[in-house]
Amino acid sequence: MHIIITDAWLAQSRALHLNGWKLLGAAALGSLMLMLGAVAAYHWVFLEGVRKGWPGFASVARIVTQGELDARSLYMRENLDVMARRLGEMQARMMQIESLGERVAGLAGLNPADFKTLPGAGGMLIGERALTVDELGQAMDQLDVSSGSRIDWLTAVESRLFDQKIQRSLVPTQEPVTGGRVGSPFGFRIDPFTGRSALHTGLDFPSDVGTPILAAAGGVVVVQEYHPAYGNMVEIDHGNNLITRYAHTSKVHVKKGDLVKRGQRIADVGSTGRSTGPHLHFEVWVSGVPQDPRRFLDAGENMAAAEVSSKASVVRR
Image (cartoon, rainbow, N blue to C red):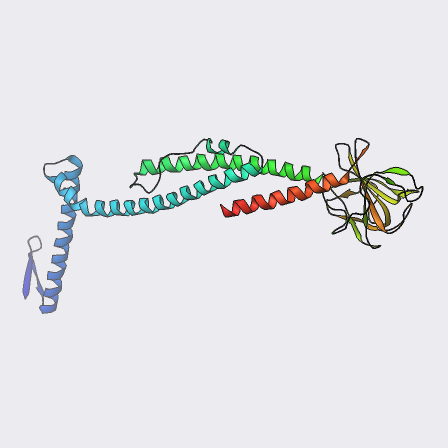
């Protein structure tokens, strides 16, 4: 193809020679420019018509965007369903926590009915129907309030149980000699040295020399000395005017002022002082008056049995 271009000002002519490849490239370039221009014009006119509300453009816009809106709606619905299922699982666990909390509250000596009247209980149950975004938000807010109130309640239960544990640890209910049999009980008996009736102010635990002696409860060592009658003696103050005494020991492992824990080894069985053979003489004093240690030890055995029974009951439920 030959194209002649004439310049009117210079009165000159220029000839362009286009072969088949050049003509094909020019046609392709021209088509591309035409399509780009058409697309740009379409978008400008379409957006301008939708923005300014030209007649007919709104319905066209709805048709064009309907597929995208449906896809977004389906995506949101699926995510809401997943969140609702997870929230339903959390509500089920919260109900289990409520049931367990009622039983634990009973063990702590608290009224289980108080556990049912905490704020945040109730509300919609997830899983009954599909929820909207607002309903799902309300359910999550209720669950947040409910969980917070139950944390406070369980903290109070924990505090009560801790107080009870501390109180029990300061009461001499631990056997001072593991598996030891009781020889002479508390009360009046014939004194083996004088042959006359006298008050035996404690319990005797016959054992081999060197057998560990354990603290019957936690406390502070207030006496550690040799006594003519009691031999090597240890006294532990447990507070509330409660003192335990351990006599005739062969060896002492604590000193005055030491803090001891319940069940801690404080001495070894011996036969020092006014003794007829190796044994531990164990006494309990309340406000300066000797008490029968058997009552304290029996109370410890009963509490241990009650705790085992309560734990078994909780597990069965």
